[in-house]
Length: 585
Image (cartoon, rainbow, N blue to C red; front, side):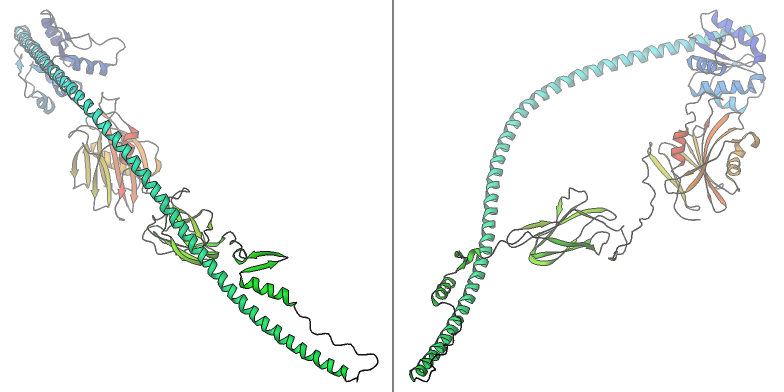
């Protein structure tokens, strides 16, 4: 139910509060006060908070009882934080507490110390009516101003829409022209690209033809050399044949002379058979064929140009990797024929990169890969091509470069396994914009939301970070404690602010690991501060030598009062786990 006035009082002053309520409601001014207006089944604290937030004026019945009442103090603090006008009615001369004085010092008092109370109520009613009228006038003026501003904004928006429509029309016309121009540019570029492609194709064909001409000329020169050698051998054989024929003719002539002299026996001795010799005609035919560049095999004649069969398929063998560093490696291999040297490589099996072509024809190949990424797996394939255009490629292999700033790895045979150092996982992205606090003495740092205020207590070697301003929640505390155990360090951190050390409850401790690999201990802590509020805290600690580096994040429990920052373990844990160590103690 909507109301105008919230009446705050202490139980002993209830009669006074009821009289004030009756006087106001008799003038049609709606009031709310407990317990009359607390709905059945409603939580008392929630009903109080909702009633204060919904009220337009807060009336405080100030007496010795309300001056010392924690509940009244909290109600006054709530009204002040919401900016609600406060009318204190003082019914005795009790000195004000510091809290009441702090929240009501700027408000006008109504002194009702002299009885009877009824003579002061008309003035109170008039004051309330005046404040309500002023507020209503201010609200009406504000609504009128907002209406004028809204109308102005709408007029400006309409104007901008018209201007935008005009611009859009102009841009559309320009876009049509630009599209036509781009189409013309693309058509011209396509024609030029096609012409360039044809030129490149012609150049490639010319290069290939020139390479084939060089290879053919080399083969023809080799064939001519062999023809010359065959002609020289044939000439020597002809000379030898003539010498043998001369010797055989002389032998036959001597035999004939002996027979003529009649010295032969009745049965003449057989004439010695001359040495077997090549028939002259076939020999001369062979010699002529050699001189003409023709060879005979089984009665079929071939030109020397076809005596040399094409080179067999080029073979790659003994591919190996050596001299691996963080950014380079050396690849070596052999081929069964002289060939070029080149390597395709990349960081995936698709490769994508190639080295410069080594045009020298060799059988022992060596290519160095440079500019590689440290500590990364690189895929590679070696390639060679011989003088007759035959190509060979290896299967895809892999190598892993060394981490940065590491000396080159020797090439062992067989290579031992390389153990990579265990590295902490990459830092997770924070859900908030962070500012970092560093404690140089103890060598640690922690990140916190950039919009929080930082208050450092250097004497206790402690830093406090508040959400919006001093005294608000949640609160981060980063400190160094000398206690032996985690629970003792937590108790020491909250002890000075607690109503009692025995009221500090540390839940079951859990082990965790920070992103840099540091082991830590965490726990949820429930405790009551000296003002009587229940506090919920998240605590994280790391033991360094005989000291505990302790981070706590605290907020007021919803069991104590409605809070704008309830306990959020996930968020608090994220902040606490940004703890890092910059140096060893």
